[in-house]
Image 1 (cartoon, rainbow, N blue to C red):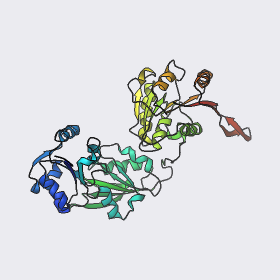
Image 2 (image 1 turned 180 degrees about the horizontal axis):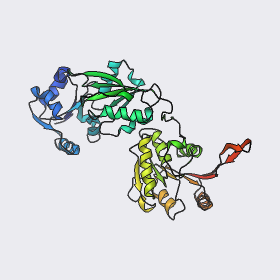
Image 3 (image 1 turned 180 degrees about the vertical axis):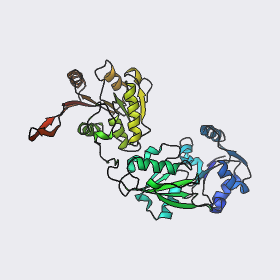
Image 4 (image 1 turned 120 degrees about the vertical axis):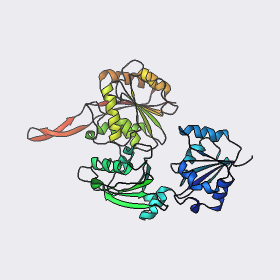
Length: 403
Protein backbone atom coordinates (compact mmCIF):
# COMPACT_ATOMS: atom_id res chain seq x y z
CA UNK A 1 0.00 0.00 0.00
CA UNK A 2 1.16 3.59 -0.62
CA UNK A 3 1.09 6.29 2.05
CA UNK A 4 0.75 5.67 5.80
CA UNK A 5 0.50 2.01 6.81
CA UNK A 6 1.10 2.25 10.57
CA UNK A 7 -1.33 3.88 13.00
CA UNK A 8 -0.21 4.71 16.54
CA UNK A 9 -3.23 5.27 18.77
CA UNK A 10 -3.04 6.75 22.24
CA UNK A 11 -5.37 5.20 24.81
CA UNK A 12 -6.59 6.56 28.13
CA UNK A 13 -7.90 4.58 31.07
CA UNK A 14 -11.41 5.25 29.75
CA UNK A 15 -10.65 2.96 26.80
CA UNK A 16 -13.02 3.13 23.85
CA UNK A 17 -15.06 5.93 25.40
CA UNK A 18 -12.17 8.34 24.96
CA UNK A 19 -11.34 7.46 21.34
CA UNK A 20 -12.30 9.68 18.44
CA UNK A 21 -14.06 8.24 15.39
CA UNK A 22 -10.78 8.33 13.45
CA UNK A 23 -8.97 6.44 16.21
CA UNK A 24 -11.71 3.83 16.43
CA UNK A 25 -11.57 3.33 12.68
CA UNK A 26 -7.77 2.85 12.76
CA UNK A 27 -8.14 0.11 15.37
CA UNK A 28 -11.14 -1.56 13.76
CA UNK A 29 -9.69 -1.64 10.24
CA UNK A 30 -6.17 -2.84 11.15
CA UNK A 31 -5.05 -6.28 10.02
CA UNK A 32 -2.75 -6.56 13.05
CA UNK A 33 -3.04 -4.66 16.35
CA UNK A 34 -0.05 -4.50 18.72
CA UNK A 35 -0.25 -3.44 22.35
CA UNK A 36 0.06 -4.41 25.96
CA UNK A 37 -2.45 -6.92 27.28
CA UNK A 38 -4.26 -4.13 29.17
CA UNK A 39 -4.52 -2.00 26.03
CA UNK A 40 -5.72 -4.90 23.90
CA UNK A 41 -8.41 -5.69 26.46
CA UNK A 42 -9.66 -2.10 26.38
CA UNK A 43 -10.24 -2.13 22.60
CA UNK A 44 -11.14 -5.82 22.19
CA UNK A 45 -14.80 -5.17 21.23
CA UNK A 46 -13.82 -3.41 17.98
CA UNK A 47 -10.70 -5.37 16.94
CA UNK A 48 -11.38 -7.32 13.74
CA UNK A 49 -7.79 -8.26 12.90
CA UNK A 50 -5.13 -10.20 14.75
CA UNK A 51 -4.21 -8.94 18.24
CA UNK A 52 -0.57 -9.32 19.26
CA UNK A 53 0.68 -8.59 22.77
CA UNK A 54 4.14 -7.06 23.22
CA UNK A 55 6.94 -9.59 23.23
CA UNK A 56 9.92 -9.79 25.54
CA UNK A 57 12.38 -8.40 24.74
CA UNK A 58 10.46 -5.45 23.36
CA UNK A 59 12.85 -5.17 20.41
CA UNK A 60 11.34 -8.38 19.01
CA UNK A 61 8.00 -6.60 18.63
CA UNK A 62 9.66 -3.66 16.88
CA UNK A 63 11.21 -6.09 14.39
CA UNK A 64 7.80 -7.76 13.91
CA UNK A 65 6.18 -4.41 13.15
CA UNK A 66 8.91 -3.53 10.68
CA UNK A 67 8.42 -6.85 8.88
CA UNK A 68 4.76 -5.92 8.25
CA UNK A 69 5.58 -2.76 6.31
CA UNK A 70 2.90 -2.14 3.69
CA UNK A 71 0.10 -3.88 5.59
CA UNK A 72 -2.49 -2.10 7.73
CA UNK A 73 -0.99 -2.16 11.24
CA UNK A 74 -2.07 -0.45 14.45
CA UNK A 75 -0.02 0.10 17.62
CA UNK A 76 -1.69 0.98 20.92
CA UNK A 77 0.07 3.24 23.40
CA UNK A 78 -0.69 4.99 26.69
CA UNK A 79 -1.76 8.61 26.37
CA UNK A 80 0.62 10.57 24.15
CA UNK A 81 2.79 8.03 22.24
CA UNK A 82 5.54 10.63 21.80
CA UNK A 83 5.87 11.58 25.48
CA UNK A 84 8.07 8.81 26.91
CA UNK A 85 6.10 6.41 24.68
CA UNK A 86 6.46 3.83 21.93
CA UNK A 87 6.00 6.46 19.23
CA UNK A 88 9.49 7.82 19.88
CA UNK A 89 10.96 4.33 19.44
CA UNK A 90 9.09 3.59 16.22
CA UNK A 91 9.89 6.96 14.66
CA UNK A 92 13.59 6.03 14.73
CA UNK A 93 12.84 3.21 12.31
CA UNK A 94 9.93 4.47 10.23
CA UNK A 95 9.53 7.58 8.10
CA UNK A 96 6.95 9.85 9.81
CA UNK A 97 5.19 10.14 6.43
CA UNK A 98 4.22 6.48 6.85
CA UNK A 99 2.64 7.06 10.27
CA UNK A 100 -0.77 8.22 11.43
CA UNK A 101 -0.60 9.24 15.10
CA UNK A 102 -3.66 10.05 17.20
CA UNK A 103 -2.61 10.92 20.76
CA UNK A 104 -4.59 11.17 23.97
CA UNK A 105 -3.68 13.41 26.92
CA UNK A 106 -0.51 12.14 28.60
CA UNK A 107 -0.45 11.12 32.25
CA UNK A 108 1.46 14.35 32.89
CA UNK A 109 -1.26 16.46 31.24
CA UNK A 110 -3.98 14.72 33.23
CA UNK A 111 -2.06 15.11 36.49
CA UNK A 112 -1.40 18.81 35.87
CA UNK A 113 -5.07 19.34 35.05
CA UNK A 114 -6.20 17.67 38.30
CA UNK A 115 -3.82 19.77 40.38
CA UNK A 116 -4.20 23.05 38.51
CA UNK A 117 -0.45 23.15 37.83
CA UNK A 118 0.62 25.04 34.66
CA UNK A 119 2.52 22.24 32.93
CA UNK A 120 5.15 24.59 31.47
CA UNK A 121 6.21 25.38 35.05
CA UNK A 122 6.47 21.73 36.12
CA UNK A 123 9.31 19.20 35.79
CA UNK A 124 7.88 16.16 33.97
CA UNK A 125 10.07 13.12 34.55
CA UNK A 126 9.70 9.42 33.80
CA UNK A 127 11.28 6.97 36.22
CA UNK A 128 9.38 4.11 34.61
CA UNK A 129 12.05 1.46 34.19
CA UNK A 130 14.70 4.06 35.04
CA UNK A 131 16.56 4.88 38.29
CA UNK A 132 14.58 7.10 40.64
CA UNK A 133 17.83 8.96 41.41
CA UNK A 134 17.08 10.94 38.23
CA UNK A 135 14.79 13.11 40.35
CA UNK A 136 17.63 14.44 42.54
CA UNK A 137 18.82 17.38 40.36
CA UNK A 138 15.28 18.82 40.38
CA UNK A 139 14.90 18.93 44.17
CA UNK A 140 14.86 22.68 44.68
CA UNK A 141 12.72 24.63 47.17
CA UNK A 142 9.09 25.00 46.03
CA UNK A 143 9.74 23.03 42.81
CA UNK A 144 6.87 21.01 41.39
CA UNK A 145 7.68 17.61 39.89
CA UNK A 146 5.51 15.07 38.11
CA UNK A 147 7.18 11.65 38.12
CA UNK A 148 5.79 8.68 36.20
CA UNK A 149 6.70 5.55 38.16
CA UNK A 150 7.12 1.89 37.21
CA UNK A 151 4.72 0.24 39.63
CA UNK A 152 3.00 0.28 43.01
CA UNK A 153 6.37 0.45 44.79
CA UNK A 154 7.49 3.64 43.03
CA UNK A 155 5.77 6.18 45.32
CA UNK A 156 7.28 4.64 48.46
CA UNK A 157 10.72 4.57 46.87
CA UNK A 158 10.40 8.26 45.94
CA UNK A 159 9.34 9.10 49.51
CA UNK A 160 12.38 7.26 50.90
CA UNK A 161 14.69 9.14 48.51
CA UNK A 162 13.21 12.50 49.54
CA UNK A 163 13.71 11.71 53.21
CA UNK A 164 17.31 10.53 52.66
CA UNK A 165 18.17 13.70 50.70
CA UNK A 166 16.71 16.05 53.32
CA UNK A 167 13.34 16.76 51.70
CA UNK A 168 11.13 14.81 54.10
CA UNK A 169 8.60 17.65 54.41
CA UNK A 170 7.78 17.47 50.71
CA UNK A 171 4.22 16.53 49.79
CA UNK A 172 3.73 13.50 47.54
CA UNK A 173 0.40 13.25 45.76
CA UNK A 174 -0.12 9.77 44.32
CA UNK A 175 -2.43 9.91 41.31
CA UNK A 176 -3.65 6.46 40.28
CA UNK A 177 -5.29 5.29 37.03
CA UNK A 178 -5.95 8.85 35.87
CA UNK A 179 -8.83 9.29 33.46
CA UNK A 180 -10.49 5.96 34.20
CA UNK A 181 -13.16 4.59 36.52
CA UNK A 182 -10.53 3.58 39.12
CA UNK A 183 -8.96 7.05 39.36
CA UNK A 184 -7.79 7.78 42.90
CA UNK A 185 -5.78 10.72 44.28
CA UNK A 186 -4.12 10.74 47.73
CA UNK A 187 -1.49 12.97 49.36
CA UNK A 188 0.98 12.47 52.21
CA UNK A 189 4.17 14.03 53.51
CA UNK A 190 7.29 12.12 52.45
CA UNK A 191 8.59 11.51 55.99
CA UNK A 192 5.26 10.01 57.03
CA UNK A 193 4.46 8.09 53.84
CA UNK A 194 2.32 5.04 54.62
CA UNK A 195 0.06 4.65 51.56
CA UNK A 196 -0.62 1.05 50.52
CA UNK A 197 -2.70 -0.73 47.85
CA UNK A 198 -1.38 1.67 45.22
CA UNK A 199 -2.40 1.08 41.61
CA UNK A 200 0.67 0.15 39.51
CA UNK A 201 -0.44 2.84 37.02
CA UNK A 202 0.44 5.98 38.91
CA UNK A 203 2.02 9.40 38.64
CA UNK A 204 3.54 11.10 41.68
CA UNK A 205 3.23 14.86 42.07
CA UNK A 206 5.92 16.24 44.38
CA UNK A 207 5.80 19.66 46.00
CA UNK A 208 9.40 20.05 47.15
CA UNK A 209 10.09 21.35 50.67
CA UNK A 210 13.68 21.12 51.96
CA UNK A 211 14.74 20.77 55.57
CA UNK A 212 17.90 22.52 56.84
CA UNK A 213 20.91 20.77 55.31
CA UNK A 214 18.98 19.30 52.38
CA UNK A 215 21.11 18.29 49.39
CA UNK A 216 20.11 21.03 46.93
CA UNK A 217 22.22 20.84 43.76
CA UNK A 218 22.91 24.33 42.31
CA UNK A 219 22.28 24.96 38.62
CA UNK A 220 25.78 26.30 38.00
CA UNK A 221 28.97 24.18 37.91
CA UNK A 222 31.23 24.08 40.93
CA UNK A 223 29.43 21.94 43.51
CA UNK A 224 30.82 21.89 47.04
CA UNK A 225 33.58 19.29 47.35
CA UNK A 226 31.91 17.63 50.34
CA UNK A 227 28.93 16.65 48.19
CA UNK A 228 31.26 14.08 46.63
CA UNK A 229 32.66 11.01 48.31
CA UNK A 230 36.40 11.13 47.60
CA UNK A 231 39.85 10.17 48.86
CA UNK A 232 41.47 13.46 47.94
CA UNK A 233 41.58 12.58 44.23
CA UNK A 234 39.09 15.23 43.14
CA UNK A 235 39.17 18.29 40.89
CA UNK A 236 38.46 20.97 43.49
CA UNK A 237 35.39 23.16 43.27
CA UNK A 238 36.87 26.38 41.83
CA UNK A 239 39.07 24.57 39.29
CA UNK A 240 36.18 22.27 38.39
CA UNK A 241 33.94 25.22 37.50
CA UNK A 242 36.62 26.63 35.20
CA UNK A 243 37.23 23.18 33.72
CA UNK A 244 33.53 22.74 32.89
CA UNK A 245 33.53 26.16 31.25
CA UNK A 246 36.51 25.11 29.12
CA UNK A 247 34.81 21.84 28.15
CA UNK A 248 31.79 23.90 27.01
CA UNK A 249 29.01 21.27 27.17
CA UNK A 250 26.50 21.26 24.31
CA UNK A 251 23.29 19.28 24.10
CA UNK A 252 23.47 15.57 23.21
CA UNK A 253 27.24 15.37 23.66
CA UNK A 254 29.39 12.62 25.20
CA UNK A 255 32.33 13.30 27.53
CA UNK A 256 35.20 10.97 28.32
CA UNK A 257 36.50 11.64 31.85
CA UNK A 258 39.90 9.91 31.83
CA UNK A 259 41.40 9.33 35.26
CA UNK A 260 38.02 10.17 36.78
CA UNK A 261 39.02 9.99 40.45
CA UNK A 262 35.77 10.86 42.24
CA UNK A 263 33.93 11.47 38.94
CA UNK A 264 33.21 15.11 39.83
CA UNK A 265 33.85 16.59 36.36
CA UNK A 266 31.88 13.93 34.49
CA UNK A 267 29.00 14.18 36.96
CA UNK A 268 28.77 17.97 36.66
CA UNK A 269 28.97 17.65 32.86
CA UNK A 270 25.80 15.52 32.97
CA UNK A 271 24.09 17.84 35.43
CA UNK A 272 24.44 20.65 32.87
CA UNK A 273 21.66 19.13 30.72
CA UNK A 274 19.68 15.85 30.74
CA UNK A 275 20.80 15.09 27.16
CA UNK A 276 24.50 14.91 28.12
CA UNK A 277 26.36 11.65 28.75
CA UNK A 278 29.65 10.70 30.40
CA UNK A 279 31.94 7.69 30.26
CA UNK A 280 34.27 7.79 33.28
CA UNK A 281 37.48 5.80 32.90
CA UNK A 282 39.27 4.99 36.16
CA UNK A 283 42.09 2.48 36.73
CA UNK A 284 41.65 2.09 40.50
CA UNK A 285 38.72 -0.30 41.23
CA UNK A 286 37.83 1.41 44.53
CA UNK A 287 37.72 4.80 42.89
CA UNK A 288 35.72 3.42 39.97
CA UNK A 289 33.11 2.10 42.42
CA UNK A 290 33.13 5.47 44.17
CA UNK A 291 32.40 7.25 40.89
CA UNK A 292 29.27 5.11 40.49
CA UNK A 293 28.09 5.90 44.00
CA UNK A 294 28.65 9.62 43.51
CA UNK A 295 26.78 9.54 40.22
CA UNK A 296 23.73 7.96 41.85
CA UNK A 297 23.78 10.28 44.87
CA UNK A 298 24.02 13.35 42.64
CA UNK A 299 21.22 12.37 40.28
CA UNK A 300 23.06 11.09 37.18
CA UNK A 301 22.85 7.30 37.67
CA UNK A 302 23.19 6.65 33.94
CA UNK A 303 26.83 7.79 33.95
CA UNK A 304 28.88 4.87 32.64
CA UNK A 305 31.98 3.77 34.54
CA UNK A 306 34.77 1.84 32.83
CA UNK A 307 37.19 0.31 35.32
CA UNK A 308 40.54 0.02 33.59
CA UNK A 309 43.80 1.68 32.69
CA UNK A 310 43.95 4.09 29.74
CA UNK A 311 44.79 3.84 26.91
CA UNK A 312 43.81 0.10 26.71
CA UNK A 313 40.49 0.80 28.48
CA UNK A 314 39.53 3.29 25.76
CA UNK A 315 39.31 0.64 23.05
CA UNK A 316 35.83 0.17 21.61
CA UNK A 317 34.21 3.10 23.41
CA UNK A 318 31.90 5.47 21.54
CA UNK A 319 33.83 8.45 20.13
CA UNK A 320 33.45 11.49 22.41
CA UNK A 321 32.62 15.12 21.68
CA UNK A 322 34.81 16.26 24.58
CA UNK A 323 37.55 14.73 26.72
CA UNK A 324 38.84 15.68 30.16
CA UNK A 325 42.15 14.28 31.36
CA UNK A 326 42.51 14.88 35.05
CA UNK A 327 44.74 11.97 35.99
CA UNK A 328 47.16 9.63 34.28
CA UNK A 329 47.96 12.04 31.47
CA UNK A 330 51.69 11.32 31.73
CA UNK A 331 51.14 7.63 30.96
CA UNK A 332 52.49 6.85 27.48
CA UNK A 333 49.87 7.12 24.79
CA UNK A 334 46.93 8.43 26.84
CA UNK A 335 46.72 11.89 25.28
CA UNK A 336 47.67 10.59 21.84
CA UNK A 337 44.89 7.98 22.01
CA UNK A 338 42.41 10.58 23.27
CA UNK A 339 43.20 13.02 20.48
CA UNK A 340 42.94 10.32 17.81
CA UNK A 341 39.35 9.35 18.68
CA UNK A 342 38.01 12.81 19.52
CA UNK A 343 35.35 13.87 17.03
CA UNK A 344 36.19 16.74 14.64
CA UNK A 345 35.43 20.01 16.40
CA UNK A 346 35.64 18.27 19.76
CA UNK A 347 37.32 19.79 22.82
CA UNK A 348 40.11 18.31 24.92
CA UNK A 349 40.94 19.79 28.33
CA UNK A 350 43.82 18.46 30.43
CA UNK A 351 44.84 19.64 33.91
CA UNK A 352 48.36 19.30 35.28
CA UNK A 353 49.49 19.54 38.90
CA UNK A 354 52.82 17.75 38.60
CA UNK A 355 55.84 19.14 36.78
CA UNK A 356 55.96 16.02 34.63
CA UNK A 357 52.39 16.47 33.41
CA UNK A 358 53.03 20.17 32.90
CA UNK A 359 55.98 19.36 30.65
CA UNK A 360 53.71 17.04 28.64
CA UNK A 361 51.17 19.83 28.17
CA UNK A 362 53.86 22.37 27.25
CA UNK A 363 55.09 20.05 24.52
CA UNK A 364 51.57 19.50 23.18
CA UNK A 365 50.88 23.23 23.18
CA UNK A 366 54.09 23.83 21.23
CA UNK A 367 53.18 21.11 18.72
CA UNK A 368 49.43 21.61 18.35
CA UNK A 369 48.57 25.05 19.68
CA UNK A 370 45.41 25.62 21.68
CA UNK A 371 45.34 27.60 24.91
CA UNK A 372 47.66 27.09 27.85
CA UNK A 373 46.35 28.63 31.08
CA UNK A 374 47.74 28.85 34.61
CA UNK A 375 45.02 28.62 37.27
CA UNK A 376 45.73 29.63 40.84
CA UNK A 377 43.32 29.82 43.76
CA UNK A 378 43.94 30.95 47.33
CA UNK A 379 41.64 30.72 50.33
CA UNK A 380 41.66 32.80 53.49
CA UNK A 381 42.95 30.78 56.45
CA UNK A 382 44.00 31.44 60.07
CA UNK A 383 47.47 32.94 60.44
CA UNK A 384 48.27 33.18 64.12
CA UNK A 385 45.71 35.55 65.59
CA UNK A 386 44.87 36.92 62.16
CA UNK A 387 44.17 35.55 58.69
CA UNK A 388 46.16 35.21 55.51
CA UNK A 389 45.93 33.70 52.05
CA UNK A 390 46.72 30.00 51.72
CA UNK A 391 47.29 29.14 48.05
CA UNK A 392 46.27 25.81 46.60
CA UNK A 393 48.61 24.04 44.21
CA UNK A 394 48.54 25.86 40.86
CA UNK A 395 47.03 24.10 37.86
CA UNK A 396 48.30 24.24 34.31
CA UNK A 397 45.41 23.68 31.91
CA UNK A 398 45.67 22.93 28.21
CA UNK A 399 42.57 23.54 26.07
CA UNK A 400 42.55 22.27 22.50
CA UNK A 401 39.87 21.88 19.81
CA UNK A 402 40.32 19.25 17.14
CA UNK A 403 40.25 20.66 13.58
